Length: 211
Ligand code: AMP
Image (cartoon, rainbow, N blue to C red; front, side, top):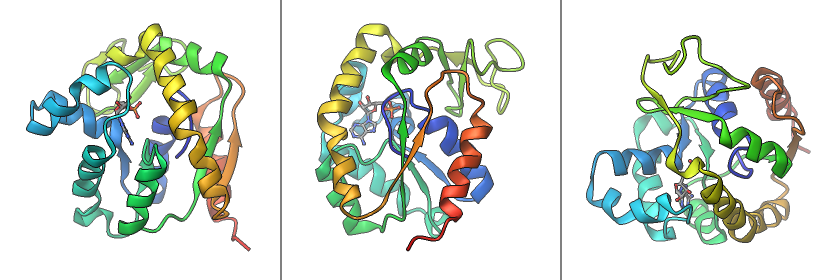
C-alpha cells in the first residue's frame, strides 16, 4: 500500500488483510512496538520517528526482515509504509517479490483533515477518526478494547514534516514501480468516504488479471 501519511494505507490494509487472509505489516506499527517495548532497536529509532523523519534504511530493513521471515508470511503479506526509499525497495527485492503497488492518490487537504482527527489504538494499532470513523465507544478500540490516543507525530508541525519527507524520499518510488508495471492508482478525493468502498475497489484491482 503506497501513499502519503493519512492516505488510508493502514485502514485499508487491515481490512484487506481480513478479506485475503494474509498479514498486514505496518512498519510504522513495528517501529512503535520497538519504541514502546524499550528494545535496543527502539532506543535507536525513537528520535527519528518522533520528529517525523525516516528511520535509516539499514535499521528499518532489519525490522522488516525480522517480521516477514515469520511463518505466517509464507503465503504473502500486505506491506503498509514500506518501502519508503529506493534503497529499501532494492533491499525488499532481494528478499521478496512484489505483486502490486496500490497507490492511494489523496489531496493534501484531505490528509491534514484526517490526520488531525485520527485516533490509534495503543494495543493493536487499529485506526479510527474522531469525525469520519468513530469507535463504538468513545476512546475505546472496537477490536480489542484498548485505549485510543492521538499519535505524537500526528501533530500539525510533524504532519508537515512527514508530508515533506514523503514527497522528497518516497514519491520517486512510484516511478521505480511504474517502470516495472506494478502500480495501480486508487483515487480518494474526500475525507469521509467509507473504507469499505475503497477496499472493494482495491480487491477488484487485485482480481483483475495483469496482461
Ligand atoms: P507510519 O505509521 O507509517 O506513518 O510510520 C511512523 C514512523 O515510523 C515514520 O514517520 C518513520 O519515522 C518510521 N517508519 C515507518 N516505516 C518506515 C520506513 N519504511 N522507512 C523509514 N522509516 C519508517
